[in-house]
Image (cartoon, rainbow, N blue to C red; front, side):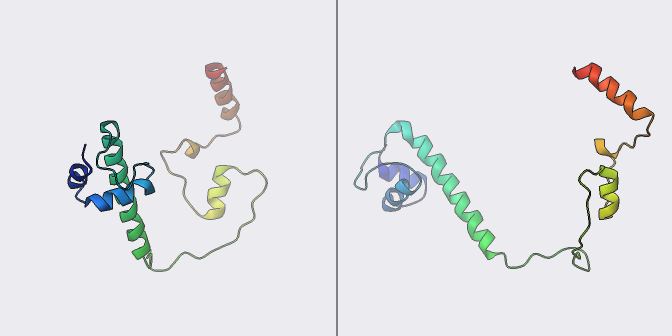
Length: 125
């Protein structure tokens, strides 16, 4: 395919296309007139991806401040954690609830937990 046709498809000039190809990993010479048909799709996808990344980078650079919805920003706090901790205890220390749909939200008493483990061993081992 001609470089000018590909450039028109991508809405750019042939010179811009030829400048961009080495930057995105295609080794096509600066004076090339044609691009191999086997690489046209790969080039198109790579250029569209490159444009999207550039758009995201410029958008990210334009962000100057991140605001929270709450009235007060969260206060930093230090907590002491033991070497091993149960999720329930961690949530209490952090003053955070455990999601109800989470597997970790199930509370076990000392009698039911060994029976649960025994069932799981039978299923998986």
